[in-house]
Image 1 (cartoon, rainbow, N blue to C red):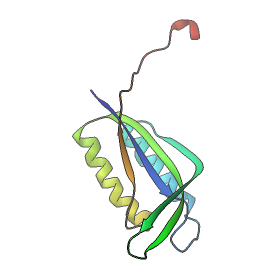
Image 2 (image 1 turned 90 degrees about the horizontal axis):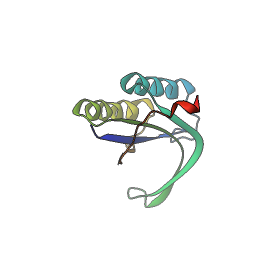
Image 3 (image 1 turned 45 degrees about the vertical axis):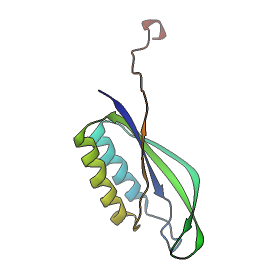
Image 4 (image 1 turned 120 degrees about the vertical axis):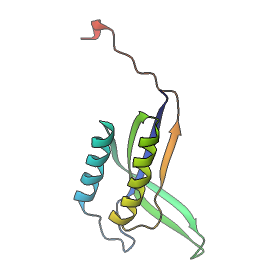
Length: 115
């Protein structure tokens, strides 16, 4: 079965610049972990910028990334679509960036001499 990587960019602050509560990140991590059996968090701050067509100004966000490699299936896509809706509410954002990265992932057992 084909493997797909999904990257979910989570904002560190609300639009009013107050810090997002840590339990919201923990809940998100646990939900992804429970669905796929794993999740990786990159807590190093990422800077995201884009042009806001409503305000005609540049918006900046400090983000962290959660990612997972999973079996590409309808149930996985259905879960991630539902997760995107949850994240909009949980993090107080109208738009959420969830990136699917299609790639070939080779999974193999390491040679026994490594242990």
